[in-house]
Image (cartoon, rainbow, N blue to C red; front, side, top):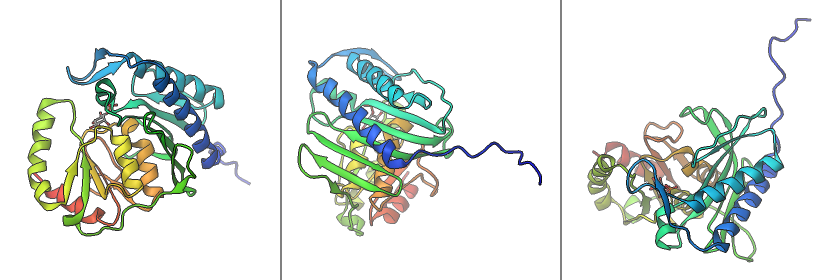
Length: 280
Ligand code: IPD
């Protein structure tokens, strides 16, 4: 018998166990964010309007500690820097406050996003979420899911409901979310595309948290969402939730979503993708 040249395939932990860890970690971070008074801008990142607050850093620190305590063998990759290598196939990809500008302005549309992914998260198309959770600290809405076990939403103490994407197939009657980057040149381009898209849909919404937008595609509140410039931490958990809720999340060419473009949707997905593809 020939000896296999390969190492044994590492066992993937049950995805629903990962979803539970993601949900607990995101909930603890949401409680921290809620408990402390709002913190102001601590620094700027890619541009003067791309801000980070002390709370982003504190919440990420808490997420790193909680996830490490639960699964010390996993890698970690957070929006606010501080990545750590691991020895398991899982990387935790976290955004401690997705929608930081809303947080700074006290607009209650921001969320903690936590995803367990496999593959190389630094290479577009080479990674995939297997479980995730998104928690809005102010509304008390929690979203979670794992590969093959569905996507769920719970409002406060109400019973959790299984999410399903919208069945609206007519793009002209579809409510579509989007977002804009922090870079002025990118924004000008996004505004150009918007002039082609806006007349063809019911309306556009820009809530300011891509993680929540994707949750709202998953629960059918939005019929679709498209956005250029999203990073893995903005969309990893939401991507999993939309697909588990029966929808699609892709880039412009039908591949995995990436920074160049993320398109998500329920029944209107193909029409939305075609419109985004052909927009200037
Ligand atoms: C931002 C939000 C926003 C999106 C931006 C993101 P941040 O995340 O998700 O909705 O339009 O592209 O960068 O910076 O608040 O974590």
